[in-house]
Length: 198
Image 1: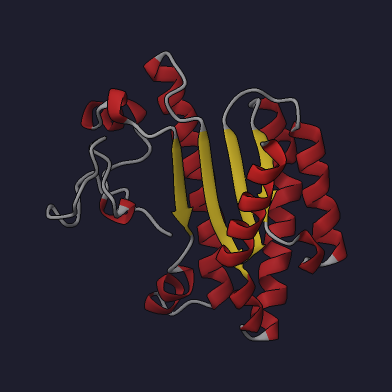
Image 2: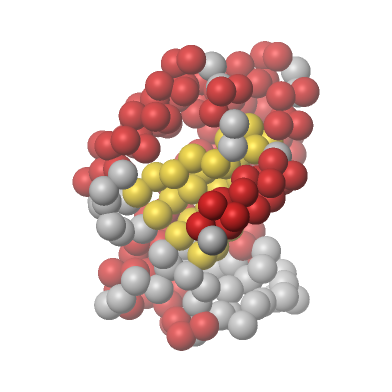
């Protein structure tokens, strides 16, 4: 998941949804200027919940003749930029148009990748958790984790639980990270939750 900072769309034919956001964010404009971005989107039509499937990190690294893990590190940086951009949009717009961001970061199928890549990715996730926990809390962001946390390495599991616990009462932007998730499992959990509520 990578964005261009060229200031110009790399493909003017990219389809947009009703908010004016490019459906393929990689072809969007400069993400470092929230005022410019705000001028391009219709805030009244901005979705409250935006989800990202984090795909393309390995391809991005391969195109630059870098190690796969460098692609994943760049993906973490992009997540940070998206979060900051969303907070900027919310503060500049005077309201809270973006309420939830969901990042589909690591599916159950990803465990089948080479062991070195998977263990490296788990370390990248853990370092990001350590680095970002305080900043997330200070920015009033609430973090939720989707997926089967029991699959995660013990040290990452603890870091993730710490973030969820620390941010549980925050009332600002909510960020969902899907780790070791399965679409089927999430549907089953959702149906069970609905039955419990009614």
